[in-house]
Image 1 (cartoon, rainbow, N blue to C red):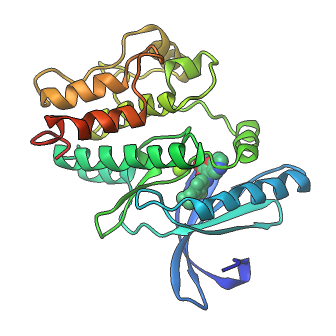
Image 2: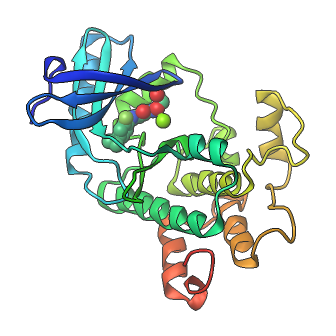
Length: 273
Ligand SMILES: O=C(NOCCO)c1oc2ccncc2c1Nc1ccc(C2CC2)cc1F
Ligand SMILES: [Mg+2]
């Protein structure tokens, strides 16, 4: 299925984020609903060709926790990426509309995200680099899948060159210039789970407004955020604390967290059930 622009019928705009625009499209011949993401890259043709080549890896990223990929193509200076249409949408829009996510759903999200991250790393050595509620998608079959992960190194560079990438979910070591590791993704998972369970971004604790710089300094210099005491089960609080260990070498990897969850009684009768 080699995708081209003329094979697709534009249906509606779904959203626009930092540097990307997503719309719902129909693949005309197969009648398949898709989400098409357009990223504008002002890079020379050889860089754009390399990005397209690297994105082909997505055809081998097959997991029920990863949004399916249909293909990518260039149209003038833009990269178009076509993927599975997730009809319920992204978790940031869901919690902003419906309020804090019930804990049994947070448990389901936790397992899906850890399994997805673990699949990407163990099978393709891919680190997500951008775990956050807007990159976790839900469909009406109740499936939870991750997207927008760093599969193309060249696209990572091009996005970094073109857009301001200081993410609120960035780990302390990453803010201080250390290189990404899978454990940096686990920090972002911790912040994401807190945000979903609390129904608000967890920094700063008192909810006051911080500038971007103040936020980054806070993440590096202050203790990790904590769930409000007594409002959540201890096992969820412990799990989030594990994800938010500030020293990256002491923070668990997705694989270690999954082994701990499935290896212990911990899993049953907890927020993960
Ligand atoms: O969208 C991205 N960032 O969002 C900010 C710009 O709007 C993004 O950043 C990358 C960096 C490196 N390689 C890829 C991507 C990628 N996109 C992407 C990755 C995987 C998939 C999988 C099919 C589900 C879909 C995607 F759209
Ligand atoms: Mg995104």
